[in-house]
Length: 391
Image (cartoon, rainbow, N blue to C red; front, side, top):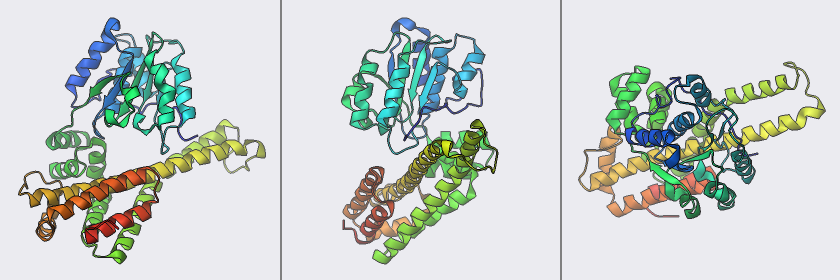
C-alpha cells in the first residue's frame, strides 16, 4: 500500500486549536466563522498555499474546532494529536495516493461521528491523486453525509481536477515575508538573527525548511556546496559528476530522515505480534513484516524525490537571481551570498539562455515527480546549464 491513513502530527500548544497557525489571520477568521455556524458550513474545503505556508496545520486546527465542543480542550488535544476517533487523516508517503487509500477515506466519510460534533476527513497531499483516484472522491465530495466535513490540502487549486475544484470551497493562504519567517525562526529556536534571515531567504519562506536550515549547519553547507558546484559545471563530465553527488547527498539525507522511524516501526510491529527483540520471525507473520518493509521502501523513494526536488527548487532560485540581475534588479536576490558569481554569469549569458535553463529545471522537477530516473534527469539538466541547449 503506497499510503495509509495516519495520525495528524502533534501540536505543541494544546487546548487552543489555532495556536500553531501562524501568519494567516484572514484564513483563521474564515474557518472560525465556518466552525461556529452550522447553517453556513461548507462540507468540502480545499486549503491551498505554497509549501511551508501552514496548510496542514490550519487543516488540523479547523478539524479540532469542528469536532470538539467549544471549550472542550481535551477533545481538541485529541484531534491535534491525531487520536480522536472522528478524525481520519491521510498523508501519503508514496509518490501518489492510491485508489485503495482513497476508497478507504470515502468509506470512513460515511460513518457518523462517534463522540464529536462532526467527522472530519483531512487529505494533506490532494495534489498527488491521479485522475482515477480523484474520480473515487467525486461523489463523496458532492454529497457528503450531513455531519462529515472534507478538508483537502494542495499547493494550488490548479493541482486538482476541475471536477474536484467545483465541489469544494477554496481557501487560499498568503505567503509570508522573509522577515516574518525569520522572526518566527528566532522565536522558535533562538538562533542568530542573521542565520534566521539567511535560512528564511534560502528556503523561499518555507517555514519548515527555513527552520531546518537555521538549526542544521551541515544542511546549510550542503546547499552552498551544491549551488557552487553547479556554477562550475562546464561540460558533460562535470554534469555527470555533479548529478551523482546531488543524488548521493539526497539519498544520504533521506536515509538519515527515515532510518530511525523505520526501525521504530519494525520493533513496534514485532512487539504487537508478540515477538521478542532478536527472536526469529515465524513464517506466519513474515507477510506482515514484508508489507511494512514495502511501505518503508516507498517512503524512502518519496523522501529521496522530495530531497532532489528541494535541490532543484534551490537551483531555480539561483538562476532566477541571474535573470533578475540581467534586468537590473538586485534588491530581492535569494542567494545574496553568491552575488559575485551570479553577476559574472549574468554578464556572460543572454537572458534567453538563462530562461532556457530555468525552464529546463522546471521540466526536470516535473520529470522526477513523474518517476524519471533522478540521476539521468539531473545529468540532462546540467548539460543544458553547461551548454545553454536542451540535449
